[in-house]
Image (cartoon, rainbow, N blue to C red; front, top):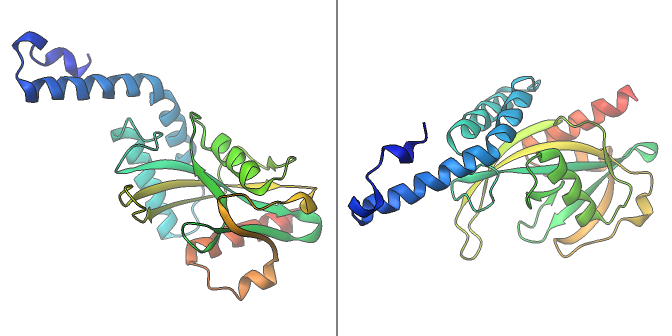
Length: 218
């Protein structure tokens, strides 16, 4: 039974009780609307092959977050929220397209928050198309290639929070159509040898290693 049914009747409640009743009403609505999607995400992650202890911890954290946080898919959730991103490959030339993020000032894969989607794969594909300008992008799988939880720093009036990122692999056959968007200082195609010389964090290196392994199987 919804928790709000156990709270005092509205006319009998004081201000704090009314606020609690409203909060739990909203939580119940979100659990009803997003609960099935969060359960699917958790089930997908239960079968995810983790590459190291860090990824194992991140997968466990996201699964727990999906259980306790009904607002996990909402970018307004202050604790953090699920995001989707995509590493873009051009298999014939064995190159990777990265964006130099306008806010973070580092080279990254494309990605961001949901805009009403409840499937991180849909978020990842939309963000990658919007930020790369590549009209033919397609995900190689509807399951994530990599999973990462990281802290997004304070920006303006948006406080520091967590991004629970499900990372996918996308491919294009039209690499010359890539265009820089307002989200980026620049976008650029890199070979794996070039990327090996760059000061990328360990999670990005892991993602690239998984992409290289996928290419070896093609």
